[in-house]
Image (tube, rainbow, N blue to C red; front, side, top):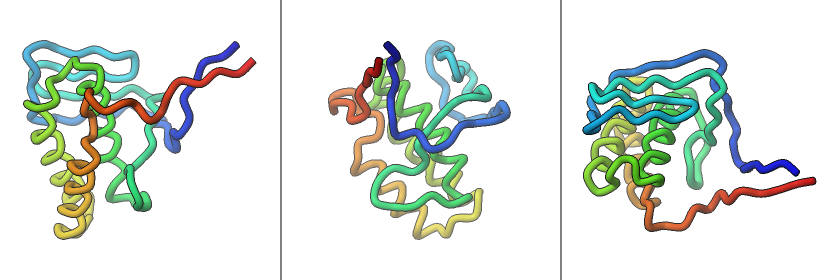
Length: 135
């Protein structure tokens, strides 16, 4: 029997790192990424994510921000990063990265409002991508 989750559209083919400015009290390690206590996020090749969530479509200006945002959402969902403390920071980072990558400011603000409305990473909202099994 295998165990899996669906919904992933993209897979990182090379390692990626970015200074986020979001500094947890201690380094947070996952199999596919590490957030260091100095704010450096290192994501390994092989990490899979679903792109931008919600009633929208993915564009080149949303790929990097959605990758980074998904890492932070997972940390918050797992309660390894406090949602109430860090969600405003990683949502702001998401908007800034969208603009850095060529998205118009008004559109980036709408996308940020969308991730806030969707409570991205809120550990008190049940996971909508449950583990599945197959023989």
